[in-house]
Image 1 (cartoon, rainbow, N blue to C red):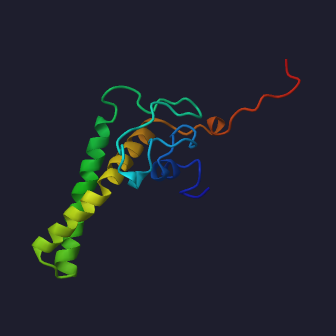
Image 2: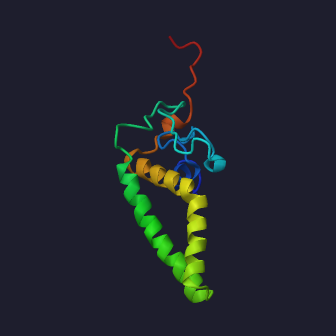
Image 3: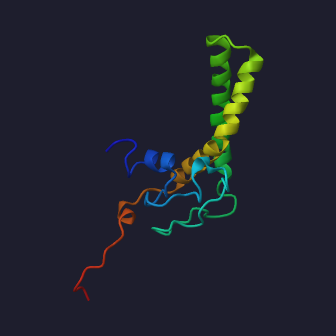
Length: 136
């Protein structure tokens, strides 16, 4: 099984799919739509998994986002300042532009990681159970 194939955590995280069945999108709009970028589905339309289990559930996603963005910003500015010999001001200006464009993606990625740490894939939920004819 590949890392980004259905059934893996990476598939669910990077495609923003329900962590239980990997069928339904977690968010109401596409990532770069920028209209209602933070609205999530309440439940998975396919398996019924709560995507908003309780108030404050995604508080932990904030820490994931903070750690990722901290290291990303340090690496980004270091790369452009020391490797490409840009000025500090230009490096930070480009960093701010990149962060502004990818803010919604990072927000969604952190939430997808957090829910995937807490909810595990169930292959039986991935396919709708078809009723068998003649079974009473």
